[in-house]
Length: 87
Image 1: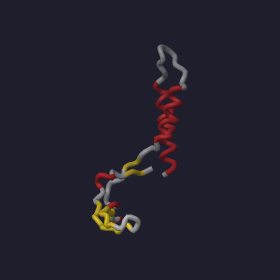
Image 2: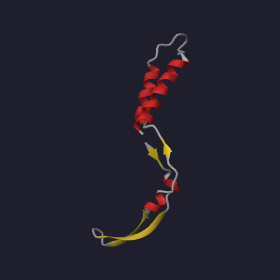
Image 3: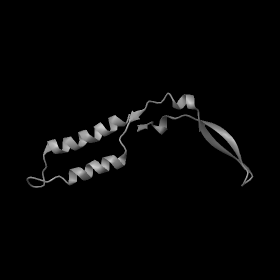
Image 4: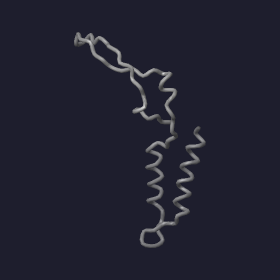
Protein backbone atom coordinates (compact mmCIF):
# COMPACT_ATOMS: atom_id res chain seq x y z
CA UNK A 1 0.00 0.00 0.00
CA UNK A 2 1.23 3.46 -0.82
CA UNK A 3 0.02 6.61 0.91
CA UNK A 4 0.29 10.34 0.33
CA UNK A 5 -0.14 13.17 2.83
CA UNK A 6 -3.48 14.75 1.93
CA UNK A 7 -2.35 17.98 3.61
CA UNK A 8 0.18 18.40 0.81
CA UNK A 9 -2.48 18.31 -1.92
CA UNK A 10 -3.29 21.69 -3.42
CA UNK A 11 -6.97 22.02 -4.20
CA UNK A 12 -8.02 24.45 -6.92
CA UNK A 13 -11.37 26.08 -6.14
CA UNK A 14 -14.17 25.46 -8.62
CA UNK A 15 -17.79 26.51 -8.61
CA UNK A 16 -20.49 23.92 -9.18
CA UNK A 17 -24.21 24.36 -9.58
CA UNK A 18 -26.27 22.18 -7.22
CA UNK A 19 -29.39 21.42 -9.25
CA UNK A 20 -31.25 19.93 -6.27
CA UNK A 21 -30.89 23.05 -4.15
CA UNK A 22 -30.69 25.52 -7.07
CA UNK A 23 -27.55 27.22 -5.83
CA UNK A 24 -23.87 27.51 -6.62
CA UNK A 25 -21.33 25.79 -4.38
CA UNK A 26 -17.60 26.23 -4.14
CA UNK A 27 -15.55 23.05 -3.90
CA UNK A 28 -12.00 22.04 -4.72
CA UNK A 29 -10.34 19.84 -7.26
CA UNK A 30 -6.86 18.35 -7.15
CA UNK A 31 -4.94 18.32 -10.38
CA UNK A 32 -3.33 14.99 -11.21
CA UNK A 33 -0.06 16.67 -12.20
CA UNK A 34 0.16 18.13 -8.67
CA UNK A 35 -0.78 14.90 -6.89
CA UNK A 36 1.90 13.00 -8.83
CA UNK A 37 4.57 15.27 -7.28
CA UNK A 38 3.66 14.43 -3.66
CA UNK A 39 6.10 11.98 -2.03
CA UNK A 40 4.65 8.50 -1.46
CA UNK A 41 5.30 6.40 1.62
CA UNK A 42 4.99 2.65 1.91
CA UNK A 43 2.52 1.37 4.50
CA UNK A 44 1.33 -1.96 5.82
CA UNK A 45 -2.47 -2.19 6.11
CA UNK A 46 -3.82 -1.97 9.65
CA UNK A 47 -5.58 -5.34 9.45
CA UNK A 48 -2.25 -7.05 8.77
CA UNK A 49 -0.60 -5.23 11.68
CA UNK A 50 -3.48 -6.29 13.95
CA UNK A 51 -3.04 -9.90 12.81
CA UNK A 52 0.68 -9.76 13.64
CA UNK A 53 -0.11 -8.25 17.05
CA UNK A 54 -2.53 -11.10 17.72
CA UNK A 55 0.18 -13.62 16.80
CA UNK A 56 2.54 -11.90 19.26
CA UNK A 57 -0.13 -11.97 21.98
CA UNK A 58 -0.55 -15.71 21.41
CA UNK A 59 3.12 -16.52 21.91
CA UNK A 60 3.78 -18.71 24.91
CA UNK A 61 5.40 -16.64 27.67
CA UNK A 62 8.36 -18.18 29.47
CA UNK A 63 8.56 -15.95 32.56
CA UNK A 64 6.29 -13.24 33.98
CA UNK A 65 4.52 -12.78 30.65
CA UNK A 66 7.78 -12.30 28.74
CA UNK A 67 8.30 -13.84 25.32
CA UNK A 68 11.40 -14.46 23.27
CA UNK A 69 12.44 -11.39 21.33
CA UNK A 70 13.37 -13.60 18.37
CA UNK A 71 9.82 -14.98 18.19
CA UNK A 72 8.45 -11.44 18.01
CA UNK A 73 11.04 -10.44 15.40
CA UNK A 74 10.13 -13.50 13.35
CA UNK A 75 6.47 -12.39 13.25
CA UNK A 76 7.45 -8.83 12.31
CA UNK A 77 9.86 -10.07 9.64
CA UNK A 78 7.10 -12.25 8.18
CA UNK A 79 4.82 -9.19 8.03
CA UNK A 80 7.51 -7.18 6.23
CA UNK A 81 8.27 -10.00 3.79
CA UNK A 82 4.56 -10.38 2.94
CA UNK A 83 4.33 -6.67 2.19
CA UNK A 84 7.50 -6.62 0.10
CA UNK A 85 6.37 -9.64 -1.94
CA UNK A 86 3.12 -7.82 -2.86
CA UNK A 87 4.97 -4.92 -4.53
